[in-house]
Image (cartoon, rainbow, N blue to C red; front, side):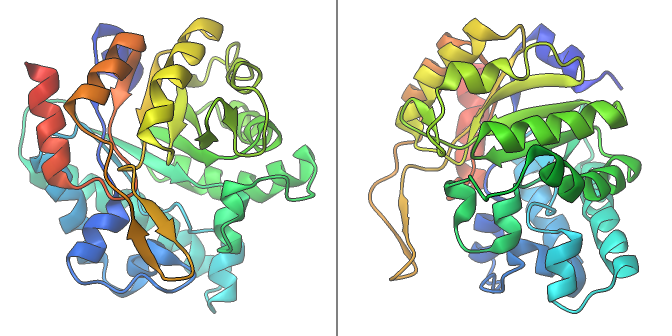
Length: 299
């Protein structure tokens, strides 16, 4: 099978949507601090079903349920290192199983999710960054988990929802050590990272890193994506990856989504026009919306 990097050089590729959104829609409780990673242990079949729903909707890349699966977070939930290693490996195995069950001749890829340090804290700090840790400390945090995911057979590492350049630098360092293909995706607010750094500075970190096959944004407002795509395309020689939220906003106090979706064919067209090549959705983006995206991109 051709690599994802080769496919991106030939044209746009469809990414999946919100894995947790699909799991919640199926009735699974994700209120635990491990979020969807809890189901790696409790209900692995549910994760296969969610992946399969996106593949059947036309997605060519599925992202594993490892975003919030870390050795530290799993230890807090009572899982030892051996079990944590097995669960991280399982996240890739389940995605590969869904790919096999999809029964299609078109190329499909598995991206292993590597969430930021703040995801492990489960306090919303992945949307702030600036944890008070050095780049070396952040690299140590990510190194073991990224190594397990790489060895598990993922096609690419998804370094995603990254809030600041320090964490991006740490993740890129580890990807280089592993020699593993990766994409780097920031979460942004307007024209800056969540930690307030200019986007050109943030994207430029990845420009000369051979392991990086794409750079862009995710888990952000759809209205911020076109500008970010243009900046990423201008300051790097990489394809651009974009998978924003639906446009709704999570109210942490009321524990509910508010506002109106801003994700659909028209904004997607603006992202493609600005240079996006790996396009999908994040929170609140369903298989039905990915099916619509697939149809739009084929048209």
